[in-house]
Amino acid sequence: MKMFTNGKIRSLFLSVLLCAAAFAAAGVLLLALDAARSGVCILAAAFAAFAAILMILYRYFFIQNKAIEKAEEQIADCISGSRSVRIECDDEGELNKLFHKVNSLVSILNANAEKEARSREFLKNTISDISHQLKTPLAALNIYNGIIRSEAEDLPEIQEFASLADRELDRIETLVQSLLKLARFDAGTIRIEKKTENIYEMMDDIRRHFLFRTQQEEKRITLTGDADASLLCDKDWLIQAMENIVKNALDHTKAGGLIQIEWKKMPSAVRIIVKDNGSGIHPEDIHHIFKRFYRSRFSKDTQGIGLGLPLSKAVIEAHNGSIEVDSEPGKGTVFTVNFLIPTKL
Image (cartoon, rainbow, N blue to C red; front, side):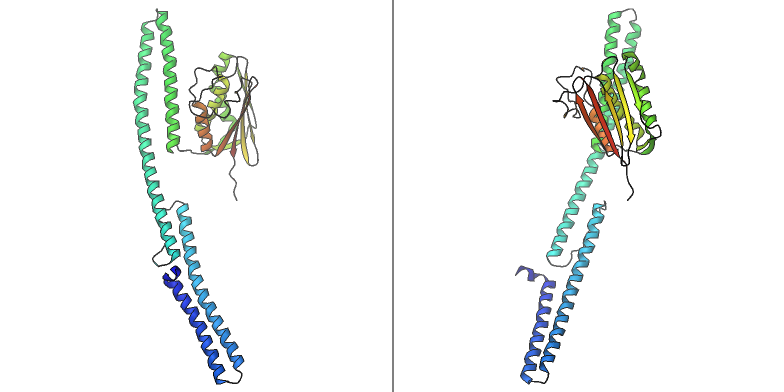
């Protein structure tokens, strides 16, 4: 049989067989001698053989259990991120064959991890190069456009086209910056540095950021929540994520519209809600708004590039948060963002 190719199993089987044979020989000898109290002697021999077999089995399974416990520790180290894990598998047997397979799997995973790390580093460097290469011509175009406007102050038609060029350059720059940020999230090169931040201060920064626009468009942003509530987060990234959500609300709200930012700190989570009374989202689009470059056939927004909400979702999820949306056409939209509060066990 295949299992007897294992020396340890073969030794175990022979040891048990030897004990049984010794007991049988002792019993036959005692019966042949017809010795007095042979029954007691046979019973004692049986107990001795049974004890010997138990000791042999205990030693075998004790050694096997130790090997499994050591393997479990090595696997736990591997799960924790150690790349120098190797389970000892120099002996023969099916268990050691299994350990050898685990070692091979760890080697493959380490090789894939190193390959992925190199790919991320390459992507990070490529993104940096692209960013540098794009910023230079964009800056030059803005300068040239400014020169054209200053040289054509008395030419209304050129001034109009220069203004349109300014807007398109701003759109290109926004698109490039959003693409680069999303690419950095995909590459895993974004570092989220969390600190305890006051929620009111962050939301007020957002309100003041859009203050000029809201005044021009006759819209309002209101803040509601505990002024002392705090959140463990990367302030810059989270403000950008929430700004994209508020901008989306402003884009789809008519003059006189209201955007409400509310927050609440609960025992296990912090919830931030952005609510508007704008045009709402069509049911056909509700499940697609976080997809990159998604444009609704019902939307009247011709300026959006479809990257703001996907970027917000990426930032929120990088904070171990979640974002949900509820909307009704003609009545407005509600974005709900939840951040779990880490608990100490």
